[in-house]
Picture (cartoon, rainbow, N blue to C red):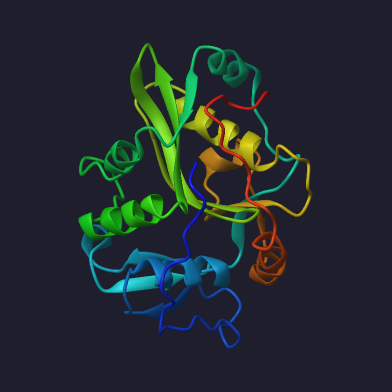
Length: 231
């Protein structure tokens, strides 16, 4: 893994101090330059377009409550643990392919545009964005991608082509992020879905998330080795 490269600073500010409780949308507009994205994640904000299928204008979001995975909170069912034994986990070997699969136009609720894919591709080139990939018999069958800033991993999207492939990626990602046992680390999943809740995702108030975030981003980043961490 390369050491993350700090991009040029953004001219935009992300101020959540006057955002009402329960309001998820922080603002509209701006750009997707690497400096802007990094500042957003450090502020507890992420982009998602407001137009059809995620097209412009860009919306900047900070959900209240926030879906998170916390250290010790990951849950893998007995059937999922059996499935995990059959998958191979790789990191950052097929970042663009993972993003493209997450952006598949046949998916319901798709929101990843070409502009978004290019922006996160740049973040990957700079060392901030990572893909956790699930492989089976030499074929990419699932995975996720997200942004890692210190002790924060902010998951953006995931996909699967065989049963449990995306869940396996989530479990592996959490294994990397929480490997050192530091309780100050956190995984952000934005909004909690039933699918994510089954893996141990919980919701916390935005104020709680922002407090945890301010500590987490100052920690050393996890090590994403080629070999998946033990479960």
